[in-house]
Length: 269
Image (cartoon, rainbow, N blue to C red):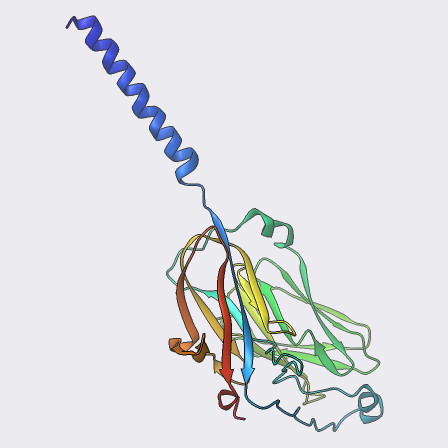
């Protein structure tokens, strides 16, 4: 073979190689996304709501009938509310890719309102890029205290009609309690994470975390009255999630955990 022909073949071969490298960089590094959903169900007799002791501003608060939200179960379908689900990471793990859809809410204000002598919502979720907005819609003064671990704890006095803004820079390992020392029955919870991949089960026990990066991830399950949601039943089979954590693979399709039954005794019932 002539030298010119050999040179031409080498040139074509190099083009093929470079084309492959370009294709890999253009497409191979692009993350794919999937969803994670499921439903939590309370397994046992329907629980009675815990009675609250009102001992301050009774004339204002009592007519608003604040209710304990430590354990909320749907009487029609036994769906378990306020199970907290989020992507769990160790401190040295790299941050997960963030889907573009979450950029729209990356700097939003997340509201916790003192209203009807309760915190609304009962469980709040905050990204560290967002701002916590605490308001008081009642006609009595409140204070909102958060017992944070990685961030500085705060106790924000919130007079009638007032607003307090807080920025939290570190993700918390678990939800942290919020309370009002003026009205001791008022309690809520705040989950702070550096990523947006978190959810709280709704009135029917359903949850869904959308647009997770595909791959193997660990998820944390937690409830204020049970702590780690660790011993559950799925498809009539007992399952143990050590420290309330499940490691699974997210693909481009929705991963459906199915119906997760949690026994009443896990809540002290």
